[in-house]
Image (cartoon, rainbow, N blue to C red; front, side, top):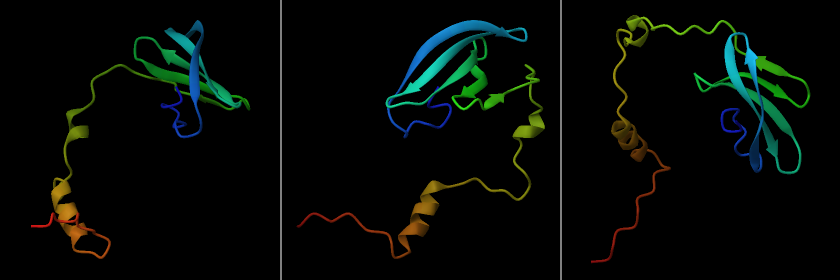
Length: 110
């Protein structure tokens, strides 16, 4: 849960199963994520989707997902827009090598 919430670099966390309950027609299992030294939140994970439906923090803030639909996505959502070219990480590295911050690894002595 801490990883899902983006809290990985904020101390050691442990997850404790809290309870199972229904949210709408979805079966969930609630986990309490507790940080060493204080702080926690509860996340309700959809058992079938393996996705958080709700997250509630200690201060009472609640983040919830609603109107989730299980359906195929339109193929057009995965088409590349016109004029876009494929990213080439090697080309980026070569470009970075041309600026002052690039440091070559020392070459072994002959």
